[in-house]
Length: 120
Image (cartoon, rainbow, N blue to C red; front, side):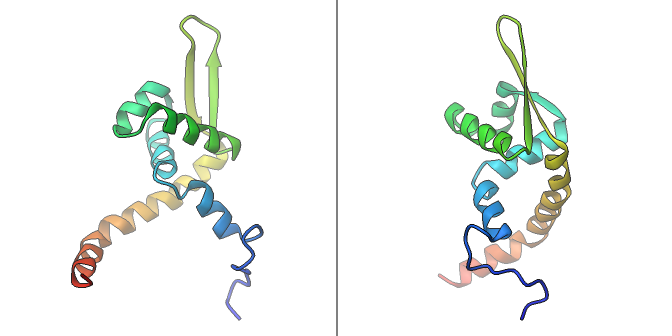
């Protein structure tokens, strides 16, 4: 048996599969990393920093992260409406893990790219 007895085959009860399914998409990790570096951002600021994300996809991503309690959305009662996004304490606790993944990716991307070219 493994060191950590986690049943990976139970989709709904497997924490790893559940979490990766939620923020392992193309945008969620990037949003978390950016908010971690800038504390609080407005929607348009976040969209500009990402560059290639549509307004709809950013909205969906932010709502998903907010539902999971990783991002908080603060609405100011003014005209035009002002909305700011930031990481919650839960989101901040995830940040060092994602930063470690970024570091690992930066250190190993060359070798992975090289391996991929050999497999063709």
